[in-house]
Image: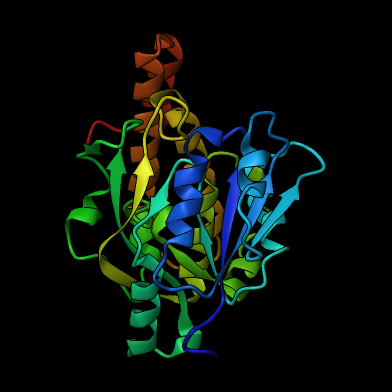
Length: 286
């Protein structure tokens, strides 16, 4: 394994032209330069393709999907084109700080954990709005020392504190854990993070390394939240099969997610469905 490995940066895009230049240029401007961009165009109808093709850099590779797919499948198809030992995912509306890759490879090279046992390198994420203004939000874990080592149970019982835009994934670990990813349109990142953390250790860069944009078209908008939570439930069931976790703790996690789903339904005006969901699967104790 090289101390300066090739990193494949996968940019999945569907009509993401508005912030695309900022995303691409945050890769071009990296102080670590051994990278390639795999740009996967999911049948965009805006200027995205022209923007990508305007860069005269042979490290940028453009691919047009044969058909529209969900995000999980699009990530899987793009991964097949990647040549790097490590993989990063950068969405069109997000960006990386200039030292992100350098700092992550540095902590990889200096880690006390055996190199072949590390499957994810992640860091802190800064959240911004459409205008680039900093938002005060994110996982509670982002406010503390980021968890490292064997963190599978923590991911399962707490939340998805690994922001995909911050992460680098060992390619061979990623390939093993993208089976059935096409079933997840809203939470493919949680599916991947749990799968890799189940078999590999994780190291963390304890500083901000990227920006994640929250805006009307973002996957983090409130109207999509219920669908995200439903997929999270399915991922928990899938990833905890045949794995020893306290039944009481896992049951409480299921109840917590179902409670939040029920409350979202009530807030959206689906009062009967929400109350029925709460009484059947939820709990008062959260």
